[in-house]
Image (cartoon, rainbow, N blue to C red; front, side, top):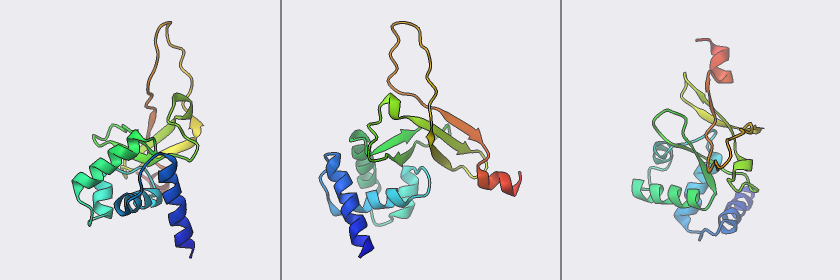
Length: 145
């Protein structure tokens, strides 16, 4: 019964972002919501073998466009995504720092660390910010290099 409540919550989050709920979209969003760190299209393909690549790609693009997920360019050559919090509007004030582990190649959101303000020259208007720290994650640093 808990699963049904979870599904209702996920369905409501899709509706709250103006996304029509379908079985595939719900399946993809559930997989994204339970993924332990930022994910790529390849990660979702591996997790959801029954969903074809073009459907996954279109679904990711829709979720990104509707601000249900945000994108992360961690320098790995593959764009990563993470599910936004319920109150996130993906505006500059909502952005946070990300961490990319050079050893295990995981990228994670550090949601409690806001991107520091940057004083730009007059007339400059930022539209996006990408702040990625790179190094060893807690797990890899405990294991040693």
